Length: 326
Image (tube, rainbow, N blue to C red; front, side):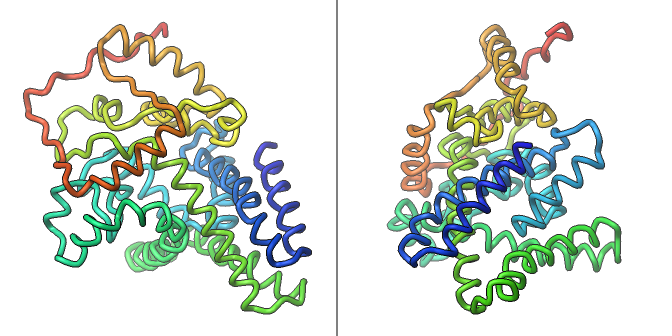
C-alpha cells in the first residue's frame, strides 16, 4: 500500500510537471523525485527479503521497484549492496560504496592515485561530492549493463537474467518510449526530463545512504564482523514525518545487524539493541540527520589525509549475542 501511494504521488506530481511551464516543471522535479526515492527504498527492503515471508513476493516487489521503475539491476544491486556493502561496510577493497571514482575516502587510496586525481581530491572533492551524486543512477545503470553481460557469458540464459533484463528494458520503455508515443513529445525533451528526474533521485539516494557510514572509520582489515557493523554504521535521528519516507534506513545499525527485519519493526529493534550495547559496552552510534549531512561534507573535504584503520589480531571480540529471550 505504501509503495503504491508513493508511486501515485510521484505520478501526480509528474502529471502536473508535464502540463506546466518549464520553470515550474524544473521547480517540481525535487518533489516528484522525493516520492520516487522513498518508493525505491521499499524495493531495497524487498531485495533484503524483509517485505514478506514469501520469497516470491519479495522478488516480485523487488523487481517492480528496482529494475522496472528505477532501472537499477536487481542482480547487480544484490551483489553490490547485500553481499559486498553489508558484508564489509567501509572496508577498502570490499565495500563498493566507498570506491567513489574519482574521489577517495582515505589517505591510503589517495596515495595510490595519479597526480591529477590527487589534486582533485585535495582541492575539489569536498565541493564536488554532493553535485556528483546526481550522476549515481546513470553510473549504476552502466554497471548494471556490464553485470548483466557478464552474467550472461558466465551462466547463459538463466531465469534470473531474463527477469532482470526484461525489467531493465521495461524501464526505458516506460520512461521513454511510451511518453513519446502517448504524449506526442519529442525524444529530446523526454530524455532530458528522464535524466533530470533521476539526477534528483540520485542526490536524494545519497542523502539517505551516505550519512549512515561516511564520516566513520574507513577500515583496511578487521577481525570481528559484528563489531565492524557497529563501528562503521550509525543511526540517524530525525523528525517522525521524515522517518516515514526513509523506510527504516534511519535505523541503519539495526538494519545492518538484522537486514530481514521489516522497516516498521526497526524502532522496537532499536530499543533492544541500544540497551544491549550499553550493557555490553560496545559502540552504538547515533547522530542528528542534518548534523550528519554536515559531517559527511567535512569528511569528504579531509578524506585524502585520513589513514584507513588496520586492526590488530588482538582486537577485543564482540560480547555474546543478544539473549534468546530478547
